[in-house]
Structures are given as C-alpha cells and as structure tokens.
Image (tube, rainbow, N blue to C red; front, top):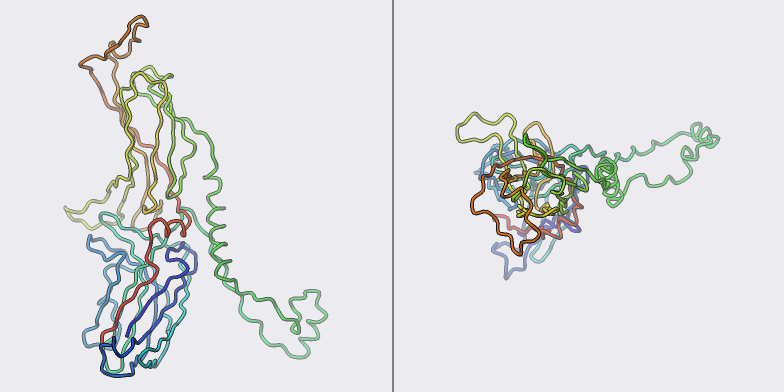
Length: 400
C-alpha cells in the first residue's frame, strides 16, 4: 500500500498558522502491487505534529524516515524520538478499519495549528529544531509502522497573535428563552435567524497571522537613515549610513561609508554577515561549543583615496530568522574589519602637479574590528517555498 502526503497549496508555514495537508492511502493495480492479496487492510491510522530539539550532528532534517516497531503493537516514543520534544500536538485519528481493493484510494484531510510561540525550523552546527508529521498505522496482527514527514516552519522574533478559535455552537433554547431572545436588541441572540458561520477559513486565518506578524514589527521595517561614527583612539575613521537594521529573509543589506569625514586613513575594509548560535544548557563536553558563528556572506573593498564606498550583503532565503528560546538563541550581526594606517606616506594628500602617484611599498597598519547587531525577520512563506523549491508531496510504501 502506498501512502502520499500532499501539502498543497504550500509546504512552508508560519508559527501561529494552521498546517493543512491531505493524506492519500492507495493500493496500486495488481500488476504493480507486491502483495499477493487483492485487498489491503489497515486497522487504524493517526497523525501528530511534533518538533524535536537534537544536540547532535546526525539529525534527520528534510527527509522522510520510516520506523518499523519490532514486534510491538503500541507506539513507544523512545523508538522514534531523536531528541527532546518541545512542540507536540494531540494525535488525531484518521480512520479505523480501512480496506481497499487493488486500484482503489482513500483520502483524509489533516489540519492543526502550529503554536505561535513555537521556534522555527533550524539546522545549525550543534543543535537542530526539526518539525515532523508523525503518521502511524498498523495492519491487523502486525507491528505498528511510523513515518516522519519533514515540515518547514518560519517564526517571527516578535510575538505573533494567533487567530482566535471559533466560539462553541449555540445551545438549543426553549420556548421561553426564544421569546426573550426575540425581544433582545441583539440580532445575534435570535435563535430563529441563521447565524453566520463563525469558523474562519484557512485563508483568513493565514492572513490574520501575517497581519499580526507585520503589525508587531511594522515600526522596525520603515526606512529610517541611521548613521554610525566609526573611530578609534587615534581619531575618526568613517561614517556608515544604513537604511534600517531590521531585514527579511532574501533582502539586501545596503550601506554607504563616508571616509571624507575621517582623520585616520582606511586602506581596505570587509564585512561579513554572521549568524550566532548560542546553546543554553549545553552538555559539559570538551568537544561541544556553546557559541558558534555561521557565516552567510562577505563583502570586501579597497578604499584608499576614496571619499565614499558602498556595502552590499544579501540575507539568504534558506537561513533562519532571529529567535530566542530556552534551549537556543539565534542572533545576527555584521562583522566589520578595517585596515588602518597613520603613516605620512598614506595620510598625506598627493601633489596635484604629479602626473602619476604610486603608493608606498611598505605601510604600517593596524586592524579595527566592529560588530553591528541586526534583526532578521521571516519572509513570506510562499516566497521561501518558491525560491527553495520545497517538496510538497512525500510518497512511501508500507511494509506488507
């Protein structure tokens, strides 16, 4: 029997959004089926969303994992769990006693909300946050089979208000209560009027999550020129102008250096976009690093003799936004390095009457390092999915 998980229309979700998918159980035609029986039976099947934290380098992220229970007819988390669970939804039963003939198929819809405070999917050097759909099923008088289907989740560094759950259905009322409701000025209390559907659609819920995410960080995204004075003990070096300090995945960090205002000569500079991974409560091992810097881009420029120079760094779409948790903190910064010199041969302006000016062969230099913290926000989930070509369908075969 074949099982297919279809995440259409999208396979990347925001924290606080509702995850939806369709699970198809299909028996191929007799010519393709490895089973000699014309009918396939399944006793039950359930689905559950979970997120695990794994502090190892061999975590299974982004791939389907099939787990066969050895002779047992019950689920044991120790058999399939790679780390510690931090997000776990209630299991939902898809069916009980399913029988399919060769060539037949049956589809089931699954939907569950991702907690708004959940961390994003992340695969770092020493820690992994991996989301999976756990699909468990069992044939009669056979061990339980479990499949872990990967799911990608994006999260905002600021709190996101999840959509409110629909109110419970209105209870039936008696005649006296109905007469009182007819006299009520509130039309919603009239039991003889058809109340509008209070259950929000999936599109409205997704829009509400996006609006909440944008409203929480709207004041961080507006363009406001910010100037930074770069100096050391010998004097002013340059002035850096940035449009903003909050960026989305896939955006470009653009800045301008003004060296005309400086008194210390800068020969060259470089900028690196770094993601810092800080493990909280890390195991006390010699080979385990609590803090790691992961580079994501570099910009280098020679600037001797220039009054202005630019800066351009791209935030990759496959990166993880800024987030904090009780297990791991992910922060971003731009690391600058300036090569400076106070030699007179460099600081003295060349004579305008000279036809050609050649730089000195040897220069005494010193290096200045500076870190500028920034905040990275998630981009639209659909943009990330289209750019990275996330797999929407996962297909696997159940053991006979």
